[in-house]
Length: 203
Image: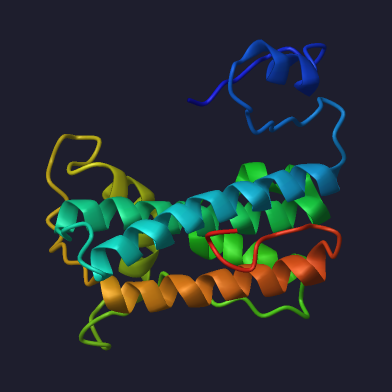
């Protein structure tokens, strides 16, 4: 059970005492610094990523049967983890600019601008085929703008199917997620050295 309490005066100790079981407390005050806000974004990103990695591992090991629908949920969690992580890294440097950023590619550009010495490879990319297809770059940008909706819903805002072919191979994607987690850890240690993150998704 997840308990959300919108009252800062109700302290963590009070919440723990109110339940028969020990609960994990997550609290961010209204006067949090940009570093604290960024850290909360990054911790949240690890939560999404670790869930995606755990479920993918279960599918890869045969403990949970894979199919395109379950794969799509894992892809959405991984995509959202990447989005939230980049926002956290940007928030530490320039929090107001986040309101003007809407796609993963734009977030990646803003991340590179905020942290020019860091390299962060996006696990989600687009490649036009054939490469000389007219308007290939514009089509890729348009796809990027709708990717999160494509992963969340089977139809667009006009209730028309996206027309995408869906496929998911868990074992190869698990390697992608493991590398993605290593990238998260490396960037986190550089941007926020005091932030504690687990070395594996089971920590």
